[in-house]
Length: 120
Image (tube, rainbow, N blue to C red; front, side, top):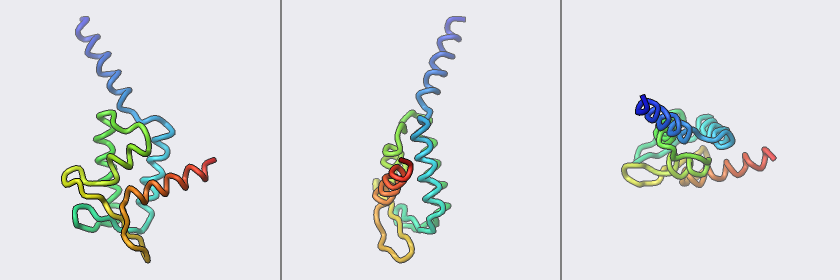
């Protein structure tokens, strides 16, 4: 019986660690919405994708990282889920209408800064 209780305690504590704190989760959700509604194209490993496909891919990476307790801030979300390919290490690029492509991490950090300023 003690073994079952210990396993349950370990499971529950690891689950608690895996959750993203409220403020970070709000910021990450904003960034994902911003990405999806941007009308921009995203380059991952040499191929261009629309915003919805890019969001879906980044959400999958985010969920994987949340399960491991690796995302506690919006900055870590950008760094680990939304800036570069986990397999090739190549940076993701974003190309918005009328603008030159730039690194997605730079683009999202700028939006995070703007969002935080507007929230204050």
